[in-house]
Length: 307
Image (cartoon, rainbow, N blue to C red; front, side, top):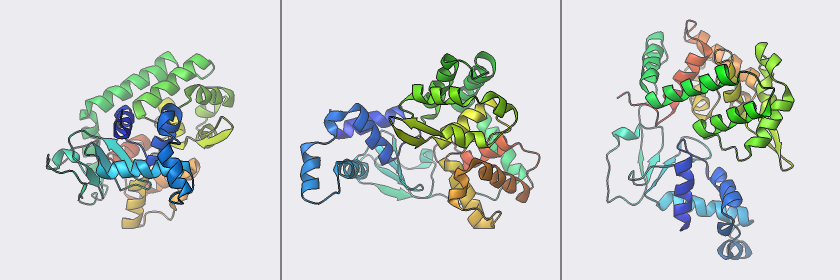
């Protein structure tokens, strides 16, 4: 199997895409024959890269520029790679609905496309987006399945089997890139989260996010927001890169709040920013979860087709 095949195989498993750094970690863990190769060591010895990790990362970036099966989303930093056979090295430079992109079978190098800036949020616009959300059958059924799991089958977090089942389902549906679901489930179990969920304790998200795996602390912040949200969706909106991107966009466009990007990684501050967004645009009739859905749809280039 070639290195390109490995990358494509990984990306097929994670349809929402992955950063080159995340792909590198999977290769290190699951494909050791493609890590610390003779070529990597030779390039490090020549001073081209600081270490083997950097050499592997450069190889992944190189594949992203030349493969006709990989979509490159440059609206995020670091970039995000997605598998999309037949889309011919498409590069997203400002968010794009790829359903409307002309296919060019002969194209072997990346092309750049753009889309118009998002519209100003209004009640009518949010209602339109939420209607579209209901029409996205795959997402709607996914959420219904998770709702059944979190609210009917395993509503509490007192048994490792229940927690592990929920962690695994979220990891699969959302492609949250958790490579050790047991360690994450054990961490949630020992954090004793049920009472804090009932009290809408927003600091819980950051506490769940900090997980030690193999003596290394990893911040699974987006996953932690998803885990809490699926217990109490109206109290815990989901943080991800698309929501972050749109909040930063609307801050730049309309100055609705004074937060910095780093502030969004503190969940209590993130909630305040969402509420500030809600108040500024007169969206009080919508729940935090509905606003979260709007922001995600507005920011995700592959979730919608509104044109």
